[in-house]
Image 1 (cartoon, one colour):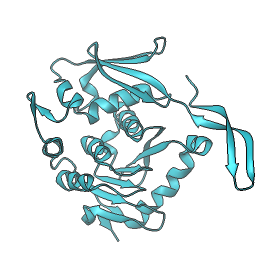
Image 2: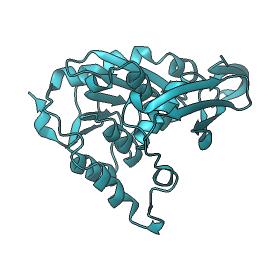
Image 3: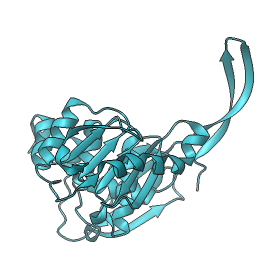
Image 4: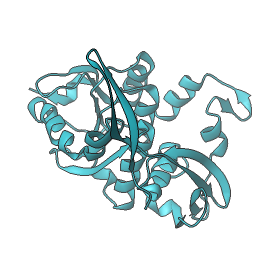
Length: 262
């Protein structure tokens, strides 16, 4: 597997002067995702978990709804760029147009935010509740897992937990969407996605992050930064509990506060 970080020369600048040094930076490499032999996506990612990312992206983009929709998955490391090919089970509806251009419906322009809100309406209204103290404590549990961030200070992290706070999946990547697709795909392939009730994000809760989490039926999304206004609107439409500015002793609830006990 390609190294996830590389050592490079840098010049450190400070008030006292400049000095030459070496530091580790995050590596990136291209990945091609094929669905039924057709190109579905071409992305840059931190090396590792390529299959998980591909499967997670297919679920979060609405192409598949379960592991059973994937009849076969192949990872070609000998190609440049590497490829993950997914052959869908018979009858699976590939919504390539929606994934490639979500603002189109039957070839006609539509409001992209309204389309997403309509597709994900009420998909996260599971009967789930969490204790406030446990939720704040999840951050302390995720930080030690971020080994690549400690090396490079350049990655995002995503973690999925069950309702009791048990860790189900964790991933780091230079892209926050990639990291989220990786944990979703890992849980889906392991058959444990239905147990995932909480998503913890080291990044902000943008519209895209909320969209992907909602597609995976994640009931509670907690982020270290603040959400955007469309993200809050989508969370409310989907029935998701959206938390921002998460710290070990505090956080703010922007949608679905009724799920948080205490």
